[in-house]
Image 1 (cartoon, helix red, strand yellow):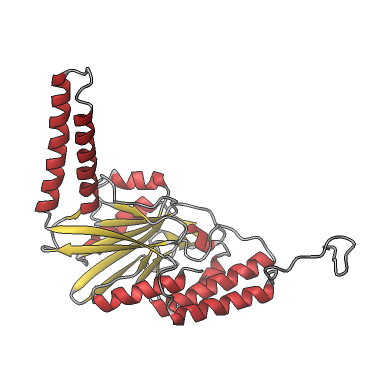
Image 2 (spheres, rainbow, N blue to C red; image 1 turned 135 degrees about the vertical axis):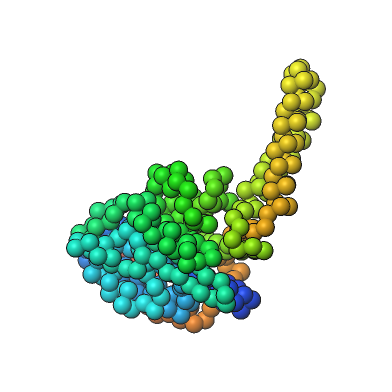
Amino acid sequence: MGGLARKSAILNDEKNNSSNYFILDAGDLFFKKNSINPGKPTELAKISAETIVNSFNEIGCDAFNIGENDFAMGVDYLTYLKDMSTFPYISANIKNTAGSYLFNPYKIINRDGVKLGVIGLSSVFQKDGINVEDPIESLEKIVEFVNSQSDFVVLLFNATDRDINRFHKLNFPVDIVIQSKSKKRSNDGGNNNTPVYSCGDRGKYIYEFELKYNDIQTDFVDIAVYESTVKLMDRKIKNLSKNNNQPENEEAQNIKLENYSSQKLEAEEKIKSAENIIVINKIELGKKIIDDPVILKIVDSGNMKKNLLNPQPQPGRKNPKHGQPGHKHGR
């Protein structure tokens, strides 16, 4: 929970600078694993989860997609957290055993004339009391409607890489996918038609997606992909010139140079001609960021509860050696 106060400080600055600012979470917010051991680990996990809820109630969140790990304490406890929360939970494919949605499948947010459609999905997993339907089939049922009601569609997907690959094979009207359940941290959205970003699983970064548009009906271009291509081709051209004394056929080198130059030019043209662009900013939650005092107070309160339940040894205080006064045997 150490990054919550820093995260809030960054978000406060950004919200003050932009009226069209949306805060989204793709899932696995409350727990790091999909199950918690009984006893003290359960009580500690509850304190952490409730501290996160209290913090997000202050920070704000426009949509939170439910992930597998969020059910680590069971459906009843997640329902309890939802009742504590002032922000919306969404999922288009998690239902109760009777087949009804446990959460709203999507959220359409209208802010200063911009309508953002947000859909929540999770890859299939097993948990008592719920039925997780196939995410791609569930997306097919609602995506056209959400797209018709929105200027921009975001899919929050607690997804395996297999399901991301399945998603890419179909031409859904989705502008951007934010993936949880992945350890990798994306530098760009990849080379497929719909950019997919993964923020990692350690909570050390905030990903800011800046959407600049001239025509909201036109596709968005992931600038980071083409910028990476330009840099890569520059390196290859430079390396080729260094190795031009090698006994390789001059004609073969010229073909490579022409190929690299063509790819670089194509990427530069994509950047120049884009009507709408996505710019990604990866912000590290480092110690230089001054904590939001409101959130820090909530986090400190949670840590105090955890310390009362599970006292930590004081630094610098060592148990005397065997045979010395004050030595205690563990039981």
